[in-house]
Length: 122
Image: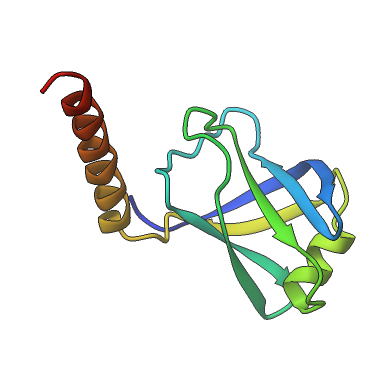
């Protein structure tokens, strides 16, 4: 998967804990984004400032990405998430994680499943 610049609209912003937000970035109609667990997006949080955030949404929902952000620190990323509003347009880069992270995750999951089965079926 190549790195791509995406334009999205903030469609949900929810404070889930003190100074912590869940934000959904919805892609334009008829646009999708395929991603794997372990990947992240790099969001333009201010002029000449980008910050990376893990994708928290399921890959099966390919018309948006969700991320969580703690705004306690007060830096450019924190200020962005504190001030962003539903309806705002956002630019981000995606597909930045190496495939080896996903491969390790998939292998670990497979090994864990095999271990679970061995427990029940020696």
